[in-house]
Image (cartoon, rainbow, N blue to C red; front, side, top):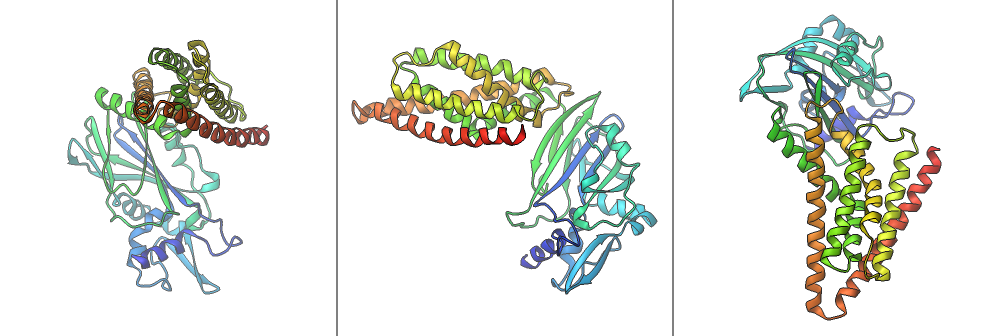
Length: 407
């Protein structure tokens, strides 16, 4: 395994900046499934194509041997270029090599893969690959040079056998223990009827990724995405915690949370649908405003005002957080999704579930703290609010500086 990792680094990292561009630590694959024509388009980072050749080497001093790699030794180091001449001479062999690295299942049965076309691109000159038209056009373009393997992306189209509602895709190559510095990002685009469902998965795809066009699956997936987003977003978590700490009673807390829900629901949907400024300063400005909202809610809790922030105030602050939710939703759901409204509602429900989970935990902790002494709940409020304000102040400074850089 150690030998394999050394070989992998040799392929992914050029020897010097003068010889080739440095490869990024993240390697990318895009899978675009055309259900109507029963085709699969794949855009894949070239290093991921040659896993078997990497594993076959007996030592780091030996060159990687492949009919489609041109290896040369410079200053004692092996340099690898993609042999586009060999690919042009034997495209069927190269396409079969790529297709053999994947398995596609439909209805629980393996699907035949028949490669159709292939093209090689430089990473810095990649044509669009967002929809079926883009993928078809990209296959008509191919670089005329032999790029370094680390600088190359390869597009391929594959005809599939009959497809059912459920399609699963997995990598056939054995799983490899990669160091933390190297990751593989996989983006799936499931097209049908002019609409697309998107999904992001990290890793080597040794476990099948299931693409299923069904309402229960869509609802469940986007509810989970909503829960994950609020729980994995520290700024949203801190804000909700401060809302609980600033509320003097359960009834007041219900009004506070309701206002936040109303506000973020409006801008989550509006922001996702494109009713928001597209200027480069907008996203960091929203993130800076979210940090400021945490400072405000923390200050209310710190000052111990009896009523806490009201419905109107928290609804206004919720408008800011809704834009923040919409940014991440745009990464997991396309505006052309066939189940757009249902997906939006499901994501928002997931956000609410995550939000209520935070509220329940913090409210329960405040209740339990009363058993420790009459002054302990207030001490807990003061400590929690103070920590939140300090963290949010740091974020605010950081994000305001970012606004200055993009303006």
